[in-house]
Image (cartoon, rainbow, N blue to C red; front, side):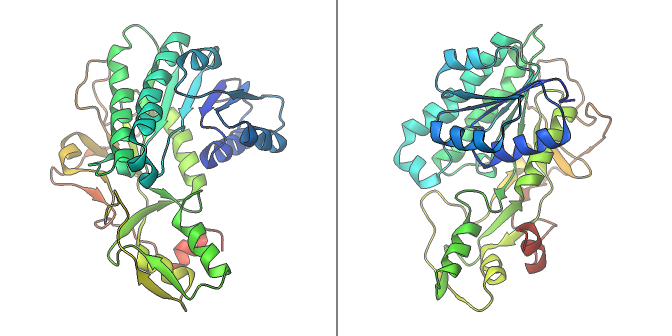
Amino acid sequence: MFNGKSILITGGTGSFGKKYTEILLKKFKPKRIIIYSRDELKQYEMAQKFKDSCMRYFIGDVRDVDRLKTALNGVDYVIHAAALKHVPIAEYNPMECIKTNINGAQNVIDAAFYNGVSKVIALSTDKACNPINLYGATKLASDKLFIAANNIAGSRKTRFSVVRYGNVVGSRGSVVPLFKKLIANGAKELPITNAQMTRFWITLEQGVNFVLKNFERMQGGEIFVPKIPSMTMLDLAHALAPELDTKIIGIRPGEKIHEVMISKDDAHHSYEFSDHYVISPSIRFNQVKDYSKNSIGETGVLVDENFEYSSDKNKIWLDRAGLLEMIGE
């Protein structure tokens, strides 16, 4: 579906944007891939790797709606990956996080409507479900904006959906590169914030392929959640360095013991498919009547009313071999 199409990625110089570009170029023949971000050095470096004739590099910030309107001219599909994501930094700089993650989301919506974009998928996070930190709260607000945008589309063709998943193994800021660096530098122990802490894990390629597939699946208004494994942070540390001790250092500001991607409060309008879940919108004014069947004919069933998709109650767990396979070792 991406052959001959124009695709724009906000925050496109990040880990996700680079992998998404790589896979798009490998699998499809797009008309244009537009990388929209505010960091000129990262754009320069990315342009050295991706030199295909379809590539375009736009300097711009999602806080700037006029620049977004210019960049989205003639665009078919948008992946909104731009965000301020560092939990403690967001706690310390709340208004900056709000400007990018909430105001920026609305700007992407307005620019997509303005240019008649066909489909928009916004990337979310497990931290948006029952948030206890500002980053999660801003991403919850962003999710609500994108879902509600379908209700004001009217006769316009633009549709919006959200993809929510957990921690990306090996991405910038992830604990895995931190642990590997400490191990390489001869650390005698690895820091663990809490012995019971669990997290969802997904590879960057899995995340990209999930987003690609959901462009085919989406009707507008869904939050797509993949079925991915969990692992305790203690097991993760022991998997990477079985010979090293661990040291409990305490939870960071705004950090959870366990992550939740679907809360019990959303269970009554969530559907289970073979490899993912769909949270349907709680308020529907658009033309979609049934989210138990998607645009490519896959069917799901309503989950139990007490269902909760959390990293500690997950049915799928990573062992050492599984983790090492995920990180390519």
